[in-house]
Length: 410
Image (cartoon, rainbow, N blue to C red):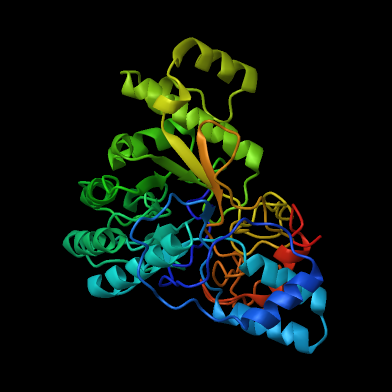
């Protein structure tokens, strides 16, 4: 399992505008009517209500403009069902990403998002993606130049949120893909130490805000063992955060993630009581053995444990299994074929440890230019060159619509 088994996140600037609402499948006719009525207009920025009610839905930002262009092109070619499907996908609540911009720019943009969401009693999900050394200088490389610059940027995010509600997905890959994992550290491990300092600074800055919950990076169930990721979460300050997030930009199944999340939450509880993480059962233990260990060693109520959220934006068909022996580096995380959108975002999961299912990765945006160990530039699994990370990928967007589980259209 390589470090890149996570999946390329967008790292694009935040976008604000369209309102949140209860997600539900659309008929083709309803989608066409919505297309005609809205003409993809963004909601103008307005002041937050003086007495904002608690959020009753998750926030839906405006779509990638290239998604809008794809929908219009499908309509022109009378491919109405596909147009309706892509429209339904873009009308589903999704995260707003912040990975660029000066502190003044990010403060203003974050504030615009949280105000727009509050006006419609919707909860915005803010994916912060600006950690120094982001993505190990790979497809989504970038981030702040150093720790002081990052801390100034986080301070700007804090000022932008203020007292309005927000869920913060703090730095995908920041803990599951440390500088020490990808040859970017020095002999003393100083860059990994700085990474933990940066994450903990962000937790301390954002979690105390009146309406904000912060979740830290725990990768996914096909990557780090519970025994490995728990110490990273502790070092990053999870004790002071609401919890952790799973599966950002990846494809693991809901049931697998729920079990992995329960094991991590339980191990964190055990560690907080003085036990070593090495003792905890991990996701590869037999389920009955792991549950027996939990019954014997973890007695905290779910309300007293760390909670988690999962990204279900593209896991409707589960992970891709590459053909055996074909690619030297299959990159199963990178624009895998035949995937579909997964469960709709919701704050009502039915799991006492799971706070939400979210669409964090924007479905339809590319993971990067995947070459699967070949000389490229084409993606050999697709026969053409994939768009750069974060760019709209029309062919993949249609795959996600066609293979959606549950379906996006009735």
